[in-house]
Length: 164
Image (cartoon, rainbow, N blue to C red):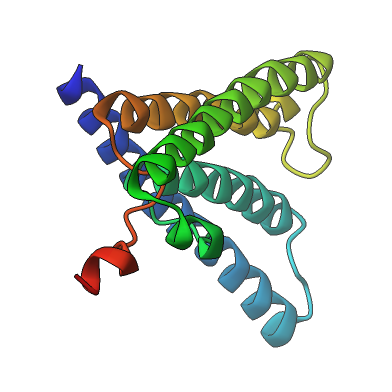
């Protein structure tokens, strides 16, 4: 199971990098064509939006796996260690629930878009909306992995332990 999760994380990381390059490339083409030739192609905006949506949502899932999300831990820092660990478990459980919600709601939205295509490129709109389903599944899986491994919701060092 660990190897599967590592493989999913590696694939997610690669996908985020590739999609970022695609997005930046589409935006560069748009800017060059607009400024140099006064003829921006219509397809670049749609491709950039598609790549951006997937990048952000996959990046969110990868952030859950790596425990790198920004959070407010002012209250956690003053809790006793046992209560802090319990609170971390509750946070991870809530993240799993949010991931499952994204899968369900994203699927309903994706399903409602079957048969619709984008205006400029003609790609199927469910391709855009499926990013929510995929990222939700990854968020739930990565948070559940952290929960079962006994990891905290974030990999931030515990400031209370640094003082001891």
